[in-house]
Amino acid sequence: MQLSDFDYQLPEELIAQTPLERRSASRLLLLDPQERTFSDRHFDDFVDLVEPGDLLVFNDTLVIPARLFGRKASGGLIEVMVERVLDEQNLLAHVRASKAPKPGSALILENAIECLMLERRADLFLLRQLQGNWLELLEQYGHVPLPPYIQREDASGDRNRYQTVYARHPGAVAAPTAGLHFDDDVLARLESKGAEFAHVTLHVGAGTFQPVRGHDLDTHIMHEELVEVTPSVCEAVLQTRERGNRVIAIGTTVVRSLESAVSTGRLRPMRDESSLFIKPGYPFRAVDAMLTNFHLPRSTLLILVSAFAGIDLVREAYAHAVAQQYRFFSYGDAMFIANRAGV
Image 1 (cartoon, helix red, strand yellow):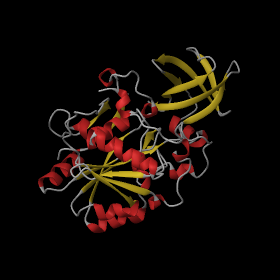
Image 2: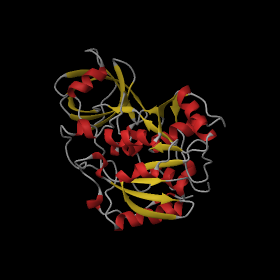
Image 3: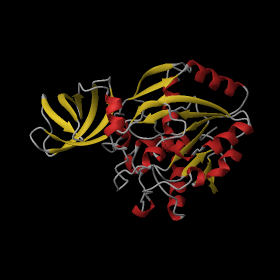
Image 4: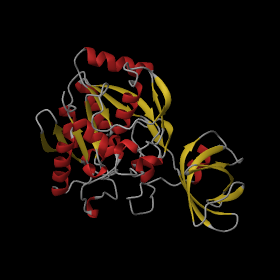
């Protein structure tokens, strides 16, 4: 399996730079891998595609304002992109600068936060401050960590729109974007129809935007992200399966969470790091259907979706989406894969 199998041409103007005025106003491409068909819908139709008793599993991570600008004590400008908050005083971050800061060097962020770069851990830098709680400082001074393909500065509205309406647990530095289409009205309609809800937590890291290095997928090492799947979620999944309904993952992060929790062959609660890389040939055991956005060419997310629905069908669907001028990536439109390939 080669990386080139997951490439496609995307006109730059189809990359959504801003969210729609209404969350659920996006378009929806419906895929049926069993029938090998796809059709154009609107996201409001998603409620009609869910059956009573289906279990929708959401990622309830909350995006933190993870981007900071500042300077080194020596004067050089820097940009900090938080990867993970370790505790009140310490975090790991990507640092962009003309010259990388050395261990022990002082940084001044947003003209307000003084911190030290303690050590380098591969591509990440360990930063420590003693002024308070990192999460509180980020909330006060940080910028919304918009993805690199959004070519504008963050705006006040991004604090709300680059966040799901059900976000609860702070820690992500990128949004679980399939969930951005849901508003309170859609959730209420799903509940009235008899759909059931469950929540996992996967704190999405900046590594989600990292390209696959090398052409052979078997050599790629996936970045780690913290996953929590509770006993109640495991029980809900098992009960759904027993009554013959679908487990519908709202986003690739939910797929990775549930499949990580079933990696031993049986679905078990977990709170641990996951570096699961799902590629074609992977035996899905926890998820039956998936809602997802459109993903970057040659990305691990597109590879996961292709593993779920089939490489050829996904390639055809993406070509159709481009031709029909769907909006792509985080603030873009959605795709619903009604069942996984081969089921």
